[in-house]
Image (cartoon, rainbow, N blue to C red; front, side, top):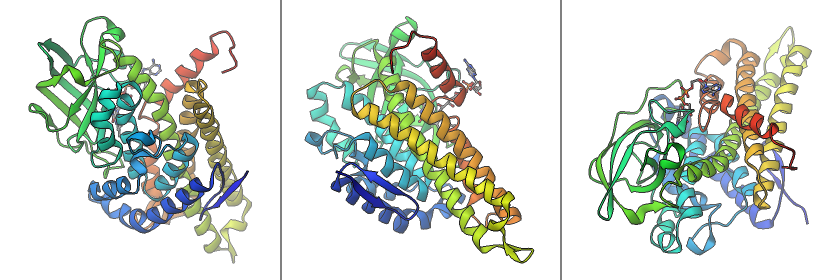
Length: 392
Ligand SMILES: Cc1cc2nc3c(=O)[nH]c(=O)nc-3n(C[C@H](O)[C@H](O)[C@H](O)COP(=O)(O)OP(=O)(O)OC[C@H]3O[C@@H](n4cnc5c(N)ncnc54)[C@H](O)[C@@H]3O)c2cc1C
């Protein structure tokens, strides 16, 4: 049976009546509580922790996780569309939610029943906010070269090193951190769930970025942090597998954030083009403008279809990593192009801070870099094409 949801910007076919209601709830919350605050918070680099707490209370921070632990048990197809609507209102919040999912992923998917019973409900219930720590100053794209060291000492690890570029760095309540437990390259990495209040854990001041400054990005410093061995997620030495599996799902989240951002830019540009008159006519009537808007709408719609296709593979339990890389690549490149063209449609007005499109343009750039640059996505896709065909 088809369930139709008609949003302010997009009409969607949803898999259940419950998901239709969820989309309305999210759109309403985003329009009332997020969109009006975005410009000011971005300009003043203010992290809206209260908005994330409210999303936690609404169940949004646990949407894709198991019901047994208080999660929403929604398929990715639904989770991502909710994320897209949040990002249409305020991209930094969409990224925060996506990063929180990424941080919960190791425990939810690799934790033992005992570990999940102890920590998962608090995390996906949104009372706690998570961060995902993989990158370091000298290991970005080459993530397996990380050097933050964890040395076993009795029944705990003692962790020392510095993680770089960490979203929610210094603000998170827990960190899913990839650390080096031996010198065996990618097989010497272990994932630890680290308490944000642990002694010896600190953060540098947030980076001063081109955009998305309401989303804090900071170095996280581990100075002889003691982490009990029961906080290993998955196996010792299996942390890189955990990290990559989390990123496959995370890239779908970033794709949805990019589509939400691009949709916001398209909406702003088409609204403006209908109103603005030159040569006695609305500029939307000029083919030069109307073709630009047509290309923008097509790029947004194609990117949405691609992330949904990848999400449905994931929901069906099929391999989806290559499709996730394609979705991240296509959606974030589309967001960059669409936000750039939105400025062009607004002319001089688009270049000022009186309209949101210059901010969207600055925010789009980050999405081409995070969770694997778009060069790395092409590498992932290219590697899959170099394998014998398997239908996935
Ligand atoms: C706003 C923001 C938030 C972030 N949040 C997090 C977070 O929460 N957690 C986390 O762990 N990390 C986070 N990151 C880090 C992000 O994942 C890295 O910046 C990214 O993986 C790239 O690493 P790098 O910056 O070291 O660039 P480098 O790896 O140094 O790359 C520099 C350039 O070289 C290219 N390049 C590198 N290797 C290759 C190759 N083999 N082939 C072709 N081109 C290549 C890259 O594509 C890029 O253009 C964040 C980054 C930003 C900007």
